[in-house]
Image (cartoon, rainbow, N blue to C red; front, top):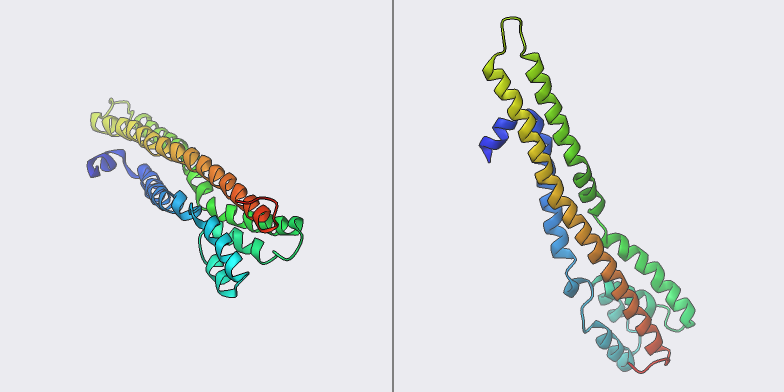
Length: 202
């Protein structure tokens, strides 16, 4: 790998930095966007049971507020449980927007890396071509300089694609994952409102 970077020349270093950032974001989002973390499957039934047993307890609200994304949405609704269903849903919507913004954290950066990596690779290619043409002299072409320029051009193009393709794949995957999680949270929140206001049994 080091030989690859050395052969590509200095233009590849921005791409190396972009690849490190991309890998860090992919790892962090893969860990943070797990369904069991964002929308725990038993949370709705637990909240309903606790509400029917103790009502809206300050300790429960504090626990939910500091819990998962879905728990934070539930906490916003429970704080307004004595209001009308419409008011409760509006409070949940407000909390949902904040939670959705948090779920999308770093995704714009990942998308930007996917978009600019081919351009950075193209920049390295252009620099390599400049070196090739700059090596031309009346006495002939220096083969060493010519080979170096070609290596810079090709390695940077390849590196740009190597960084861009996985970044774009994971960007699209995480965007879809976030959309699915938001839909699931909306569904669970609606169920909570309807159960607490007696509009449905479970």
